[in-house]
Length: 338
Ligand SMILES: Cc1ncc(COP(=O)(O)O)c(C=O)c1O
Image (cartoon, rainbow, N blue to C red; front, side):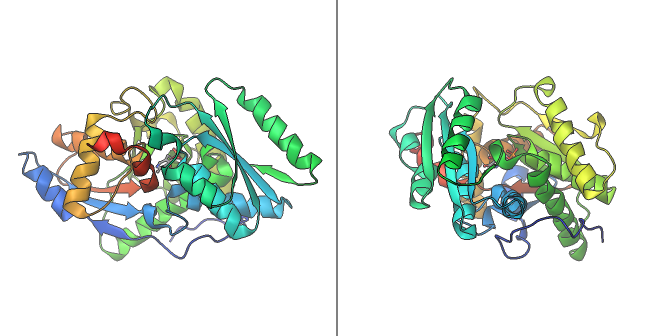
């Protein structure tokens, strides 16, 4: 079985593989719409086990490992007010005995009181992070510099984690997840034709592509964009992270032809609810008892459902939907689910 190099810095934040589960009642519900339906499985990376779980736990195992190796005592990261990545960074830092500084930008024009008091933001506070809220349009680079200088002036050693943990260090985790899915599928006699996932800051997508290249696999990586509006807005950055990750793990390069992204489910923008997201979240909750989230996996699942109902995915395929977490975000959007 293909494996990642063994010498990469790594700080363990979770135990063992997450479950790969079948979704028979979701499939039945889609079949009842009169369309043929592939076999659907779900990879439960919402169950990574760290303070609400999600894909960032995986990335943070490598990022915190790197920070510790570099002698840092403080991590800084940034995101939207309801960033799952920020919440997971706060939790990972707590577990590793590091300080966490979160710079949260008010970039999402979503107006519900809970958005600025509940969900991930509430958990960030409970996890003991230093939180700095910045208005839309703030100069991110200047704010980062200021926070770094404040930490250094106080005698600390900061380590900067990019938005979403999306660089070659963090994305290595999703190369690992690609291999984990392949290994779980093999044990169960499954051939995975397609992995569908929500894509934001591109690190998950880049890592999956690098893992696929390492395994020399034909499994299609099918991303649903919840942030970037079109191919031109993401291709260069995605390939850069994917190829830096591929290089880091000794995989062949990733090319333009490996990139498949559906841009039809973004709606009015990042973090703004859509009716298809609400329907997807409710359908998966009511058929499988699994909670998705309003910003990422709800839109990702809306993409998968609509591709199935439009006949874009052959019925003889086996599809894995990668649940990347985010459930705490539901509590920031109560009005969307009325
Ligand atoms: C729940 C959830 N799913 C998916 C993503 C997207 O992952 P990436 O930023 O690596 O594209 C994120 C990113 O914050 C997330 O929080």
